Image 1 (cartoon, rainbow, N blue to C red):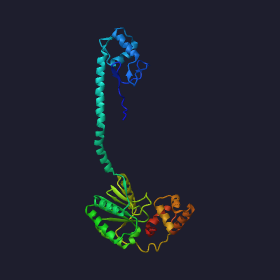
Image 2: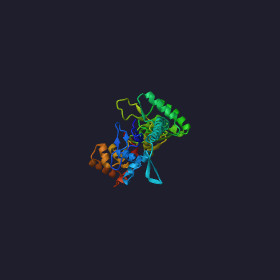
Image 3: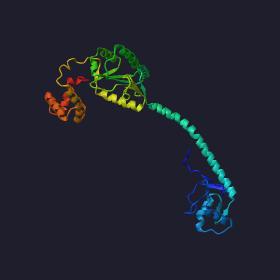
Image 4: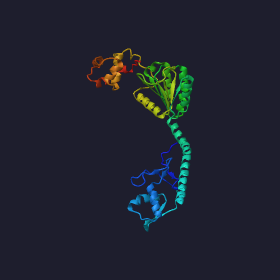
Length: 358
């Protein structure tokens, strides 16, 4: 493994080592021995020789003199700065080698500690990943899906959110769910379930909702489609398969990523806020029979009430803007209003908004 920390070279010939330098004197290149070891430049060797002969120095020698002092080859007495003293190069080399060896030993010790530090810190990092979740797992076997769901709900401590957009469940399945959810309610878990509005017509589901409402569970119904999911404590979730289309319909994803689960829980809350409270009472039987609007008009009204642009509504329904405008005109005549705001208000008060066209 290469390090980006500069390594000091060894000056074997001169008996000293030093940091790699690009220049000797100002503008002068360093001499480099084969293998890349940094050598003293010729002018430094020449100046060292002059110092040993006690020759007079000039101001131009100061940069090179500083180089020799740094290498421990020359000493300067502050009281006699003009008379530098040459030191034993062999002794200077031993001192420099000792210093470099200590530095290398310290660096080797730091390098040896890196894996141990990484292993120790990884424990905390893995715990943080566990707290955030471990991604998602694809489940194909129905028995495994049910077992995972049952285990997760049995461990619930705060909240259980269930969105069931499908058809009614059998009484046997509702009985199993009643025992499971009742135990959760006894532990103080908040249980909220979202159904399609058409479930108000199913006798078994109505009975289930009445009994569980008495135990503290909450139910709401929503007209129109929504996504199926089970969210436990906003930490784990189960959703239908939306990626692998070649598997059976009972396949599911067990989502463990905390951010993804929190996002799904927020989506559930948005659907919950616009849904109708339900305590198990049946849906009025004469709503659809006495409808004054067509299915197309109801789709337009639902999008209008939701603030969706008419252009997008027309694209979704596969009609032109002119056709959509004509239908809105018919609806204004039906309720005797002149603005979209008035039309939306009348729709909100109309029993026909309870018609589930799906």
